[in-house]
Amino acid sequence: MAEWTIRGMRGEDLVDIMEVARLSLPADPMCPEVFARRVFLDQNFSPATALVAERGGRVAGFVTGFVRRYAIEDMPDDSNRSWITLFAVHPDARRDGAATALFDHLEETMQEMGKSSVLVGPYVPNWWVPGVDEKEYPEAIEFLSKRGYSVITRPLSMDSNLVAYRRPQWVSEKEKSLAESGVRFQDFRPEIIPALFAFLKREFPGDWQRHLRATCQRILQGEYSLRQVQVATEDGEVVGFAHYEGERFGPFGTAPAVRGRGIGAVLLCRTIEAMRENGLHNAYFLWTSDESARLYSSAAGFRESRRFALMKKEFGG
Image (cartoon, rainbow, N blue to C red; front, side, top):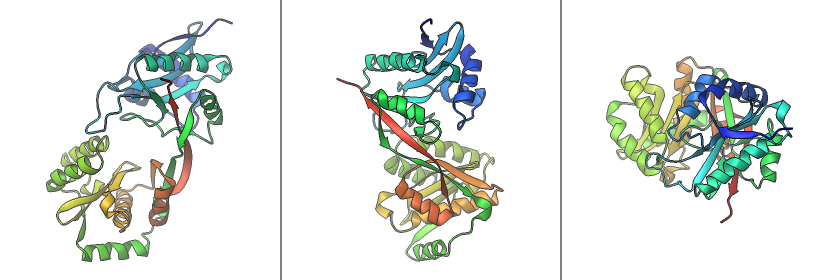
C-alpha cells in the first residue's frame, strides 16, 4: 500500500474534510461555513500546521493545529505552546497509518517552531470543544495516550431546560440580602462600559473582552436586548457579570474577592431569566469544572451533557 502524503490544508480540500468529519465526529456536526470561519479565517491559520493525509488524490484524514502568531488582548504570553483543535480520519482509513503520519508531521513541525508543548482543545479564539469527548471518542484518547499525551483536567459541558426552570427561593433571598448590603444587580447600560471593561482587564484578561465587546456593540446597535448582559456592582465597582449568546450561556465570572457570597448565583439566574424572556427553551455551555457545576445545577438546573479529556504533551528538550 502506498504511503500517505501529508501536506498543508487547501481550500479545495473542504468537501473531503466535511465528509471525514461527518463520518468520524458524529457528536460534533459542522458545516463548511463554520469550519471555514474557525479554521481558514483564524488569524493564526497556517498550512504548516493545518494538515491533511492524502492518498490517490483523496483526503482521508486531517488535523487542525495552531501556533500563536498574534497575541490575544491582555492574555499572558503563551507563545511557547501549540494547539490541536480538531482531528479525524475516515473510518475506511483507520489503523492504516494516516493518524500517525499526521501527528508525526505536526509534532515535528511544532518542535521545529520552538514550541514546548501541545494541547488538544482549549485554543482561543477559535476552539470547538475543550478536549476529547470521553464517551464518543475513546479510540482517540487511546491513540493520544500512546503518543505521550496525558489528561490534565476533565472539563464538562452542561445543559438546562429553560421551560422547566423556576428560580430557587434561596437565590431570591440572596439577591435581597446582597442588595441590602450594597450590591447592585442591573441590566447592561452604556455608562457601565468603562467600569465593566476595567473589571475584565483586571480579573479576566484575554478572550472574554472580545466576546463582551462584540455583544455590547450589538446591544448599542439595537440588535440585542439590554438584558443580554447582567452586571453586579459594589461601591461603584463592577464585581461580576454574566452574558449569553443565543442558547449559549457565558462568559460569566465574579471577582475572586467576592466569591462565596452568592453574587454569581444571582447573576446566573438573572441571565437565565433573560434568556427565557427572549423565548429560548434551552441553555448550554461547553466548559466548566466539577466544583462550578454544583452552582449551575443548584441555581439553574443545569445537568452534565458531555465530559472531555483535556490532553497535553510536553516535547522533550
